[in-house]
Amino acid sequence: MKIKLLIASSDVEYREYLSKTLSEKYVDIFEINVCTSVSHLKQILSQTKQDAALLEHEFISETELASIKMPFKLYDPLITEDLGQANIPIITKYQRISSIAGEIIMRFSETDKIVGNHGGPQAVISVSWSPAGGSGKTTAALAYASNKAAKGKKTVYLNLENFTSTSAYFLENDKSISKVFEKLGSNVHMFLLGVRQQDSGSGIYYFCGPDNYEDINILTPDDIETLINACAIGVDELVVDFSSNCCDRVKKAFSIADKVLLVSDGSSGSQVKIRQFFNQHNVFSQIQEKIILINNKGAKTSIEKVNKTIDFPFVDSNDPISVFKSLSGESIGW
Image (cartoon, rainbow, N blue to C red; front, side):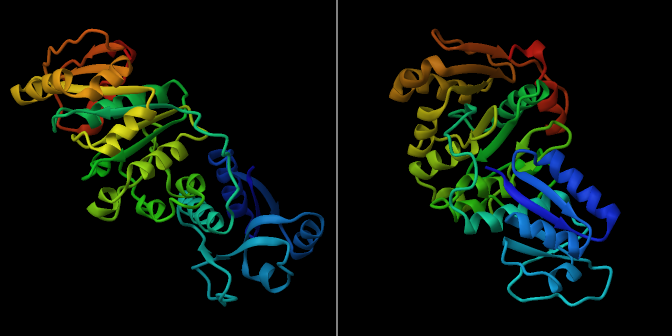
């Protein structure tokens, strides 16, 4: 079920730009309706109820808002005007459309517990992990995600490292994913939509990092399951990136995953830890057939009965974005 969103503005150019962008970029979330005058607004509201509405000042002052579940005042910072009723949230014009959409979704989801597609996970879930830090698991995760996005798959990247590196790969930062962690007992899927961003270069959807270390550290295995399942709704691919430890949260993610991108590098430390995981850890036998073994930085690791083995070529670049994009092509063997 989509959010019925009404846009009431006398600013023709901005109204058309806002409605067009929301309709195109958030087609799975919003059902957009627009009106150009107070009389038009009254006519619409007499015929149908709206989930949310963006209303300029003159529309608010002249209209009965009982038919709108969540009205917002669309505030123009370039002119002097009354901010209006204190109980109506304000959204400022001319800011990023993603910020406007996120604010509407977040606030609306706080009042509605059933909106959204709750039919269960739809995505192919892949977990990128390594027992050795610095092996390149984030590069592998993003190369895989970029490959899928380039094929037209709606692909989400979820970084759950204790110390996230998301900002090194995606330039736009907006609402922290910490806002979602506070709402895990509520309408999680809708909250995630409210903070999710899309990278313009790769097409990957992603989440900005948490506000602090503890926000990730206090998540339970059940929280991880809730978060992953909510992220997987309505998309084709979900790629989850974890820190290099095999705690209960990672084990829970392994149990949910369809694939595990297990990354090894050529260092002696990485090779020792990979071999220990293969030979000594009971988790390996549980996920063996899910594993795509990725040899990075000259690694020659081999193991029988894994799903697939991929050897990354050497990429001569210090730019992490260009590195993962270089490794996303079909020639890699994805």
